[in-house]
Image 1 (cartoon, rainbow, N blue to C red):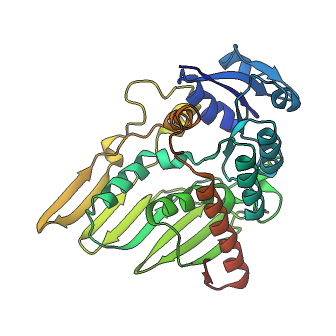
Image 2 (cartoon, one colour):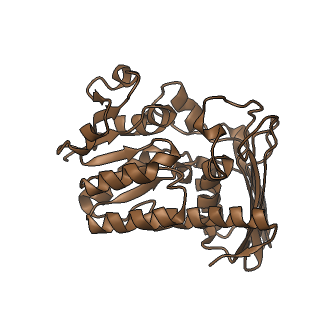
Image 3 (cartoon, rainbow, N blue to C red):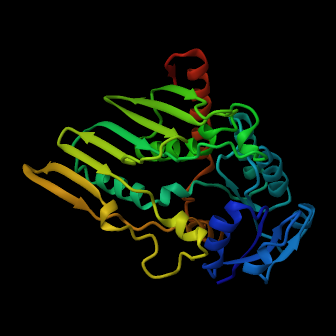
Length: 348
């Protein structure tokens, strides 16, 4: 096994909580350089890595094979472009880029330079989502008539100095957390026929979108995607109704909180949820009524990078294809148009 020599372009939350730990536990990767312009936080966790203050030190290092572009959204396009033109494979943090035109350009650059590009849609590896996938794959609800997903938080203050609290309409929660739930819906159901979206700013003094209500219209049903920063008492994360029954899943995937306490995804029982968070299934299968709990499939975000290793070294299919990330951006753009025009938009 030849480890993939990797550079991480930022060591804020995403570097500390998501990318760093996943790469650390996989012997298939070697963290070689970390870009930290103002701090040296990473040396405590990854003393073997060299801290650099200039992106050029990564671009011009012939040893680096993979670059993780986990910087603020507005830097994704230019840094990803530069890395691929330097012959590096890349991972781009979600949201992919701020507009679909830039996404198309990056896909073309990847093909032209014969490198792999993928987007870090890690919520495909949430235990709750994996369990929903299994319920739907096994057709345990009959024909789906309604799908609802919530990604709520309680943050009633404005975090001054954060780039996420300022900027244009693509800076707020729609492109941030919305990229997760839209991606999940596209994985489950594919391209929608049309899109209806309502966006709001609810927090006192808020300057960017902090609430959305999206409806992806499909033949015979809708996928309802909701998010708000002002939900202190959480309801179900997934609510799915079908012709034969319903599945309701509460709770939040435990991985992020585990990672924030410096735990690593190679420990025994990683991602396992308490029984109190298991989903309830009430349905009929082949004429037999079933009502009870469905144990949540444990998720593991490091599987994203395990797949990427197989793709780079052995040509395996990518878990998250760049064309799928492009589709997510196009849906988010359609949400902006729907909200501004206050109407349902056909999705082409």
